[in-house]
Every structure is written in structure tokens, then in C-alpha cells.
Length: 271
Length: 355
Image (cartoon, rainbow over all chains, first blue to last red; front, side, top):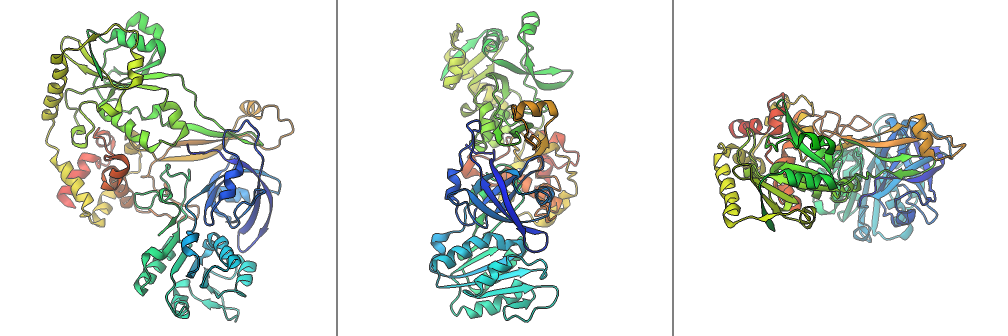
């Protein structure tokens, strides 16, 4: 049976990262016997790229990607932008507050299929969040033959995950694009959008990427995917992280439907 | 399958009402609707006649509640609030509405709230022997005879107030245990099939619906058509509310009042967090804001896109593998409800003529 009741989590701490964006650190709490849902053992099997539903009592639930999946002690992280009612309230809370979390949901990135391939990852705006854990994991295990990241943001103020990107760029090529303001003269920052830099990045691969991971605004992902397919990359090797409004996360509420099918039936990662 | 001849429905109704809460469609002043029948009233007034008139609202709400709490937050932990209904019987459910329940049984197979209610319900179906005005159940394999897989018991009207009773499921057979019943004769059993066959032949010509479904699945409908009919969708949710297979829902959280909060918090003195509950409610995919995100990005911004999705959800071949049938059961409620005149008959005629 679907579990629609959250586990209790504690907001451990947080820090700001970019405009209206904040890293939140949560800890799953032990559950008393009065709750009927499963304990957080299942959280330890969270796959890279899955998401959870965060419950802010009296304000509602909303889906968020893990930037760090739950560890053996139940600690996990998410990067969240202040946007609607749930996140606005979340940004007002102090450390120690009790919240709820349901999950993990979605299919996750196909890590077995990705392993030891030429990989191009492209994130736009908040869309970099679902790519954090996959990039970290690939770098940590060194199981890729080539890995490049394009990250697009509207402006420098809206860029996020600066420490992570600075760390990554010592190990893999990272291409940062911004649409407003000037570039800082660094050799990995470019004016424009990910689409503008994409031909250059594809040229740098020599052979075509064998796997492309896309995360960000849908219009950006569809546009990039069309370009990539036209460029000769098989559509079966292009993965999109679809993030939609949802109320259930189990495929029954109807809010996240793409065309007529709930993507949750096949996972939030769609080919 | 066991089949019996009933001289009247009274004994069956009385028997079932003693072991279960009893619901039947009553027709007060031309407003047929589901209503609980209280035992004390039955003893004084008897049961109302069983009607074939379609209730404005289907039996959907008995299982998929129009609004219900999913969980409460007591200030410290979250607790699931599963419903615990007493056993109940829906007496005289039309074949189309039974097929819709069957459809939702599949859709909500893993939903604990739906299943908590469903497992307490006994379904007594009633065969239709006359077509209803907007109905086309025969065209979508939902009637006019009750399909075996959709009911526990089936009633078929014979002449002189007599009924054929068909016991289908183990629950149905168990529910009539203790009644003195007369086995039906071969003639009475065959009468059922004759009557249903005759009823099917009385339906008007609905070939435009078949033609419209084929056109829809052949992807022969241009986007401009949906834009045109989308203008007529007022986003009132009449169709989705009355459609017996529509299942979209939303959720919201709300604080709980002081007295209720105190009970829920269960003497957790010193707990600062306000108690709250998370509620789900019927939603409509035709609302402009149904898919709108917090950023105001809306994947289905145009009414035409939403109308298109609604009709594909009812008639697309894509749903056949999972459900073994279309999402429409041919009840025609959307035609009666839609103020924009884009219910099923109207839209199918438009698809055939204009798309």
C-alpha cells in the first residue's frame, strides 16, 4: 500500500546559497509505535536522483531532490529555493523544528547504465540540485571515461552550489553560463545559455557523449534534447529529471501528468 | 454463480440491512440520489421502490471520499488517519457505475484510504432494461447488464414485481446466507439475457462516438480543434466531479482547532508546535491552476490542452493495457452537467464533424 503519511524529521541546520536559495540539513527521527508507517530503514536505500516530499505542518507538502541521500544515521540534505507557500514558511523556521518527509520516490538516475561512459550533465537554475549527488558519486568512484558539466543560471546572483562547482572544476570540465551581467573573466564562465555553449562542449568530447543527463526547466531540457538528437545522440541515452507540481508522489493525484501518463509510474527520471 | 427467484425485494433488503449500513438510490421529486436507509424508518414505512434512474452523483464518493484527512500532526509526530467504516451495502448500483468502481479499484489498488472503505462495501448491482437518455454503456462494455466482475450480487427485474437474484462473489453468497431462496428456473435465467439483448437494441445510434474514439486514437485531431473547444470549458469541474472514474485529487494542510488539537496531542504538555491535519479533496484537471507550479510555470496553461487531456484520459488506447477498457463508462453525466456544451456526446459530434 502507498504510504501517504510522513516520517518526522528535524531541521538540523541550513545555510544560504544564491538568491532565495538555501541548503537544508535534515535528520530522520525515531518513530514511536503509534505511527503506522514504516521506519526510516527504507530511506537508507535511497537512490541517487530520487526525491522526497517535505511536509511543513499547516502549510503543506512539496517535492524536493536530495542533494545528499540519507546516511546510516538518517541525515540528508536538500537545496531549496524560496518560491511558494511551503518554502516561504520553511525559510522562516529555526533549526530544531519538527517537519515531515515521505519517500524516497522516483526512479533515480540509472547509475549502472551511466557507469564508465562518456557523460555530459547539464543543469539549469535549481536543476543543478538533482545532479549534485550523481556528479559527486561519479567523481568519488572515478567510474566515467569522460565527464563534463554545463550549468546555466540567469545571473551570478542566482548561481548556486558555488563551493561544489569550484571543487568539481578542479577535476572535470565545468562550463558556467549566465544570461545577465558580465562574465568574471574566468576561463569557465560564458555569457548565454547552456544551448549556446553546447556545440563547444560537444566538440570537446571528441567522440559523442554516450550518456546525457538533463535537469532544469522543462523548456530548456526539451530544447537541449532536440538539439542533441539532431546532433546524432540517441534519444535512448538522454535522461531528463522531470520535476512537476505534485500532491501524492505515488502516481494517483494527477498533478504531475505529462500528456496523459503520470511520470511517476516510470519514475521521475524520463528518457 | 447461484441464481434465485425473488417474489419481492423486501426480504433481501431487510436481511442485508440488519448486517450492514444500507444505502439505496431514492427518487424524491425527480432528484434521484444515494441515501442511507435507517432501520427504524424501514420498519414503519418499508423500503422505497428500487429505481433505475441514474443518481446525479455516482457511488464514487463512498470509496474515494470527496474530502478526507490523510494524517494528523500532533506537534511531534505524524499519524495516519485511516477510515474505519462499518460494513455497508450499496443496493441497486447501475451497471455503468459498477464498472466505474471496478476501474477505480484498479487505479486505487494501493491506496489504503480507498481500500479501507472498499473492503467494507457490498455491491448489489441492478440491470438496466431500458436505455437512459444520455447513456451509451453498451458501446464501452459497461452495460446495460451488470458485468460479473463488478458486483457481489446482481438484481434483474422480471414481471409482476419479481426479481432474478444472481450471487457472484463469495462475499455476495455469504451475505444472503440465512435467507430462504428459491432457485431460478432456466426460463427465468434466459429471460435476463433476452431482456438485456432487447435493451441494447433500443439504444439510439451512437456510431459518432465510436468514430470519434477512432479519430482520437489515430491522432487525427489538430491542436486548433482543442483550442476552439477549450474556449467553451468554463473550468467549473462539473464533469470531473460527476464523472464516476475521475480520480484527480489535491491536498492541503490546515491547523486543527484547540479542542481537537488537545485530544490529538494526547497530553504532550509543553509541545509548542500547532497540531494540524493534511486533507485530500477531489480536484479537477480542468482547473487553470491544476498543474501550475509555485514558480507560476504551467505545463497546461491553455484550456484546450486541459480539455484534450481530459478526453484522452477517457478514450485513449494508452490506458487499455492497465485497465483493460476505456476510462469512460458511458453514463453521460458530463453531457448533462457541462454548461459549455462539450460533454461526451457534444464533443464526439464535434470531433467527427469539425476536427
